[in-house]
Image (cartoon, rainbow over all chains, first blue to last red; front, side, top):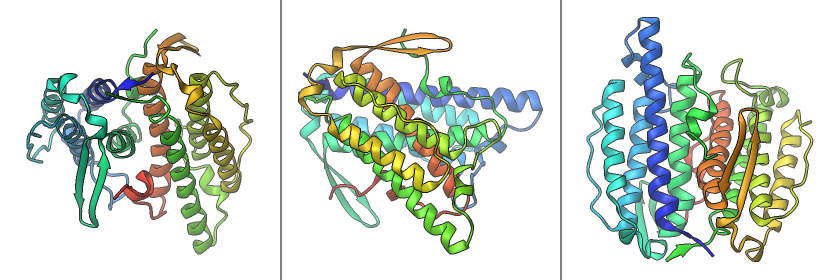
Length: 170
Length: 170
């Protein structure tokens, strides 16, 4: 009795990315209603030494495409970190979703036991595919999308838990 | 090729709860160094109409114990939401960890296809055990623990990503 690596990775990340894109839609509508340049929102930071919203989106995207590619043994596309507007950030999310959704259940067969290596300034981390997904990818992805939510929510954009979770099954 | 419901639930939530308890340790040390009452930190809010830190911890804990209990068909213990200090919040996390860790792999057998019903003011949500875990429990748990992190980090407590993820496997 178990759940497939595909099911706990590909639709989950697709859903989380889509929800995050929805935060940006609400943010753009808020800026338009308040008549300010929405690009200002891309620069929001909780504190000066945390990443701005734009970087939070980029890291969430990179976490998702890195996971999909590494677990499926597919080449991970490179996306330059050049986005400065909400429209550009939505495009970044959209191309990440396109890549994540391109992965098939067949490519994820056996992913739970594949070795994954991540290089950090502090050293190299080695995971099995399963621990990479549960101990690194999912917490990291949700952390950064939560920071995007926190930045927008604390700056006037009307977001609620349903925006974060998306439509729940009934 | 798959991963067990136990593996993507019980150790994952235990780890996330333990990491969140670690944020509170750093918060308490910060308050002591700055000579203020650490209970002030339990009242932090990002904005007035978001839950305070204490409630964020309580919801993260309830999400974890609800998941462990519902998926394992074990009775979910009730914990009164009375905590006002960091020490009390750490105790709340500790008793949640104790319950989550009490669940065995045998109890989680077949959990992915068990029906789970959640009642919300807006109606009843029905999930399979698998979708409940991936679409509700994990994003909700990480959302609230990320809010705890954001609140402390933006109020001077020196937290980094390694506090959120915990020690990664090498």
